[in-house]
Image (tube, rainbow, N blue to C red; front, side, top):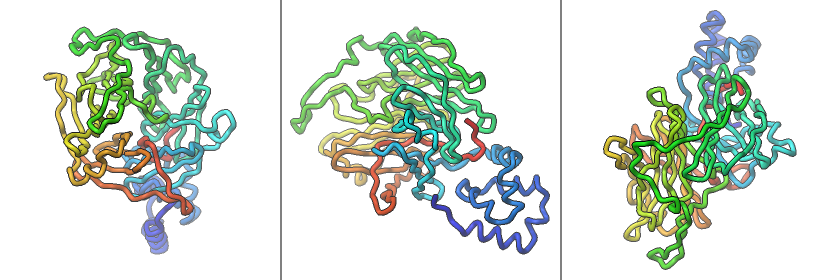
Length: 399
């Protein structure tokens, strides 16, 4: 792991001067818990007292009281048996030790499919699920679950990192007959499957054959299919929000339509399309600050645009809230790019990939800045990623 030494050397100097040595254990833990996660791994090399403290449960409890940490983005590439992350706080790539449980034969090539809090969930080729803390390497294999009907979405929500309280939600069915099943970490079991009814207020009902693939000619004369071809890690991509006490899972259908499944009310709604079905575009859903947003890369008049949209339930319309500068997005024109995105607080991480181009962009809503990230290189090898999942690097997160 790439870790800076500046912060630690300053702490050594302070220890020599005695200023931190004079603090009692509780106060010292509270002060050091605010250090970046990368730096926490080096505490044990400072002195015996700090090493003992870093391994203590009381220090992990102090870390759990930090409201939030700058996200790390868990990257997905062709080699599923290694862990590469992008540290947004230090704007650098890091290689983590891949969890040992994921290197066992039956779990090799497991795909990361969901993340929340300090945890990432993987799905193996047999349909089993493993929840991991990528920072500590700790893992838990979930009880087997009957896949039932066609799996459509996988979502995760961590309620407490320190107490290991989280849910994994599976949405299945043949649209419009949908159902969901929940794994509860507290009881360590899967709950009974629950059917979802269509929301009575849903005024955007699609025809049953709307999800069938449609082929048409693009302006360039290429045959285009409306049935989206997602990368394996985003095949079941969805976002989880908790608003006004209601748990909602959003996911994309194969034709790019947004579906909202209200788990609390046990119903689902369809959102109107952003663009006509006979349009060339790539789309993904993200969650930022508890809100579902949609990112769309489209082409029009020999140029490409990358925009972020928010749905207004009162007017039942989509409103644009951000757009990449045209000079930046024009580079993506006619590259046949697929976008895979993930939200984290005020940021959206965007992977743009095709046979011709691979690029990563980080957008910040607060500063309205679009930043193209540097290339990732490990041992002289340039890596290209298909997608990413966001998590908070927390040493105290229990599986």
